[in-house]
Amino acid sequence: MPVLFVLAIMTAWSTIIVAAAEAPYQCEPTVEDEMGPFYRPNAPYRHSVGTGYLLVGTVKAAHDCSPIAAARIELWMTGPDGRYGDAWRATLLSAENGTYYFVSHAATDYGSRRPHIHIRVTAKGFAPLVTQHYPGADAGEGLFDLILIAEPESELGNILLN
Image (cartoon, rainbow, N blue to C red):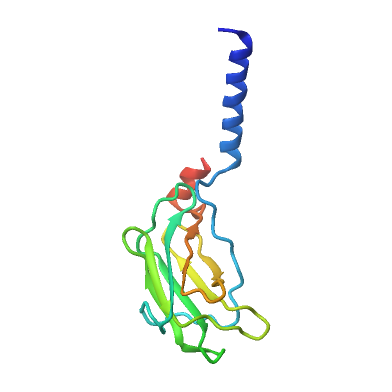
């Protein structure tokens, strides 16, 4: 085997190893966003607070992109009148394959903020996630995967850290 060929293979292999070490997640974690002042726990379990907009996605583990079943997803948003209220809050659980869906009216502006839906996700062994979904203008549906990071204190987190 020519020496240059062996060196090329060794260089490529070390590049792959370094890249893997720098990218601990197979799925990019969902970006955190502000909770906002209107979060209230214990929203009713329901998949719908209106009609006209469908939000779907999958709750996944960042380390390997595996689906997370029974993740608790809390959503809250403004009503069609642009105000927050209990009628626009919901809690749901992700399915066995990690999928979820939520039906609402089109999100509305809130003051100077563009339309958004607040989301808080909790699942055993994972750090809580607080984020927001920003629907596209005049969109009737949106796809928003929720990618969670394992908690360091969990068994999974300890495996990933060691």
